[in-house]
Image 1 (spheres, rainbow, N blue to C red):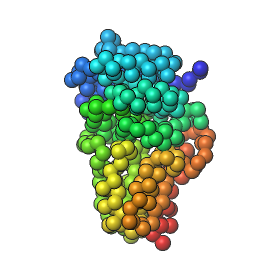
Image 2 (image 1 turned 90 degrees about the horizontal axis):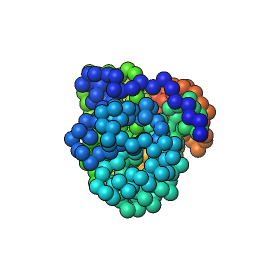
Image 3 (image 1 turned 90 degrees about the vertical axis):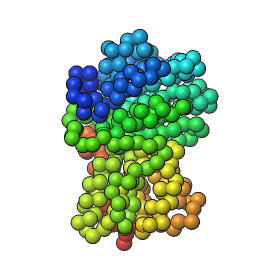
Image 4 (image 1 turned 30 degrees about the vertical axis):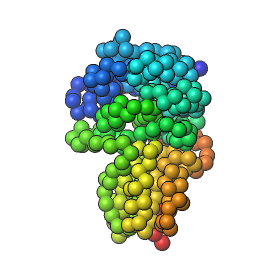
Length: 324
């Protein structure tokens, strides 16, 4: 199978502590230094999954399984039964949809302590449909015993890795690709599994979001403020288990609610929130921003976010329609 992988930066080439806290590769390496159970498994994607540092510094705990993700999941499940804590790595589509039966039967069903780390979430790649993960959250949400975490960005990566390692069971960690430039002065963000984070508070509309969409939601909030609409932005970094108490509280205290995700509107964060609202007493106006049941073409992240209406202007438009 031919995979186009190029232009990625080896995180081991950087030296600042701030970068280390914001790099998945360095966060994983730091956790492995603290917990000798952690082992790293890869499927011929060492550079783009930021595991080169682990490979170079801990070669005895690094295992390259080649382009055979199903076997990698089986190996990880066996290692977990022997007391290891395997972190397995590939692109989101390859480590969920391609190996779904193995994940279900060898990881989720026996509650194996395997951490599944996927990169390139949603519409963030020019490589097209084969690499665009728009159904991975839906698949993993359907599995009993599976926890799903998607950090808001570089500032929350370290906390996400630590929370993943601390959880005694299967975790799907949905990671963005490494960025060559980010603001090192931004304070690191904590992550309490299962508890959403209020990043900004308002009174009119609540925007519940995750991953790369957090930035878009905060931009939308600023635009809405200029239009006289006060918005709350909540980072739902743990998609399963969902923070149901926060969802219900925001539904009681706001006139409208929007979910914003880089994923299909079917089965993802929006669906999880809608299910909670439907089962409760709330009658709040509700809308979803996400991929609308289509396959997307390849292109730059900015182009795709705009074309498929995942950007801040799309969130603003949806908010205005609900508020009216």
